[in-house]
Structure formats: C-alpha cells, structure tokens
Image (cartoon, rainbow, N blue to C red; front, side, top):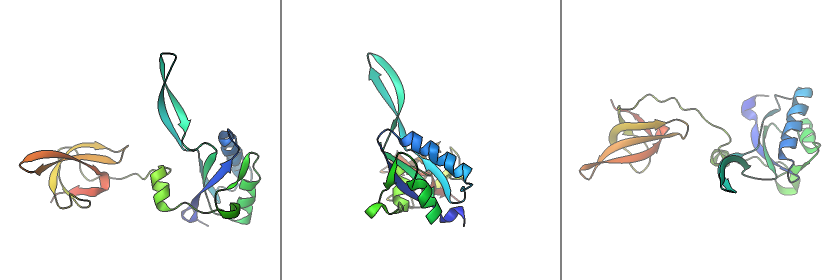
Length: 174
C-alpha cells in the first residue's frame, strides 16, 4: 500500500483531549510500525492576537476543538488502533464509519501545503492563464509563496491595476 492511497479523515475526541489523542496515536503508530497505514496526524490551529489585561500576546487556538485530522489507509488494524485510543470517541461519519474528506475540504482546511515551483520572478512579464483576467498580460510586482499568491500589475482602462492571483494562475510571457 502506498501513501498516495491514504485519505484524510476526521476523528472526534473528548473535549480538551485533542493533543493527547494526537500524541498517543503517533506513539501507537510508531510502536506498531504502522507508518504505512497512518501517515499523518494534525490538529488544525491558527495564531490569534489576544488582548487581555492591557497585554497583547499571540496565542495558538484550535480551529476545530474536539476534532483531530488523520491521514490514513483504513484497514481493520488502523481502524482498531484509532478507535481504541483513550479520549477518541470515533470517526466523523454515519454510524462512526470513516468518511474521507474531499479534495476541496482538505484544500480549504489548509491541511496539506502544496509547494509550487514558479518560473518567474519580480519584474518579469507574465500572462494570466485562468480566472476572470485570463489572457491579460502584466508585470510581477510581488510574490508571496507562503500565501500562494502573486501581485501582477496589469494595464486596464488606461492605467495600471494590481491583481492578486494564485501562483499557478500565471505563466511567463514568451
């Protein structure tokens, strides 16, 4: 079985047990040498700036309290290991049967980061290949790989306008 067959699933945990479930699962996978079946375990978090008692601090907050994401190939063994972790109440799905997340759900959750190799740099002339501005040409003003975005200055209505696009929406102009 290959890692490409693994899909993302959501498991429900008792409140406040997300980190313990993720840690215990990782330990169990290591001990039972199941890395080929249970590929990745994530707790979606976000950084939030909090103001409390006139102090500003950045904290990491769980986006979905009570849930852990797991990338795995479902077999009787892997299902058994996940279900029998203390604090895990089961898979999200009908009758606690595992239902994989769709590609769109995985993308919107930002669980998997896909690196994009770009063949252009700031100052290069490019052509937009998809979206509402398709076939417009412009000049790359800024590239932000972390946000998967690029700013392109395009000529529209007699003046330059900045367009925010995804990295794969443009190609170098010939």
